[in-house]
Image 1 (cartoon, one colour):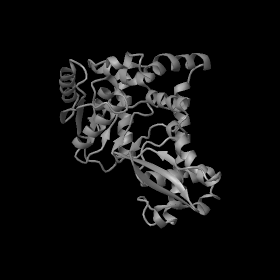
Image 2: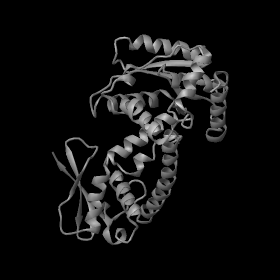
Image 3: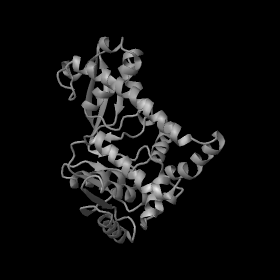
Length: 328
């Protein structure tokens, strides 16, 4: 790739995104870590719309404050009209990666003040996400990967290879921060990036990352259509998005049984989420589905719920699926 074209190419990508996907936006925020992806995005975004950099300091490393300060200074140097450091307290729920992600997104959401937030995920990140979903067997929703537009989060670089952001930073003479976690083989995503994807590229003759990203797009289109069909079923039952309106908040098995499997399971998923379930797995949804398709008087299915000190169950009472809670 011609290094002299990297910055121009990124600017064109972000300008096209702004025109097609965010036409009415007066300004936007850019989530900035100081790494090459987010720094290249900030530099490109600042030439398209007024941009405010939001730098999250997870306070997990001794020099995190100086890294955040350097990122703030670089954001201003590449043309951002503002830059704010957001210090967060990372909890321990769900492991270090998950806890840091939750804290980061909460801080960004609070600080954005109604503006969209641009995230610097690239095509390489998308490929890694698809592989993670495949390995976990968590269904098409996870394999469908990340969306370009998922308000208030936007990913204008999702079709761009990581190589381009690195070249753009080099062209601009920017010193980028290299997160030590990105080289830590204890993290599954790091091993996918440094071991699995290169091996697949070698064995399959290249183009693997692009193929995985195309697969995600195709699956996402199919998933969106199935989700819309399921939402229409729930709306027809009077459930809407809150689960209200159904007799006792339940789902009639006679309505569910004739539905295509993919639609029925999505109806069940939407009903469970509306009833307070969180973090559902494909295995749990299929177990609730079996209360309709393979009913033999089996017991209720425990599903994860958001309310503390209670357990959430999906069961069947006569011809209705019902949700109920029990104290822990």
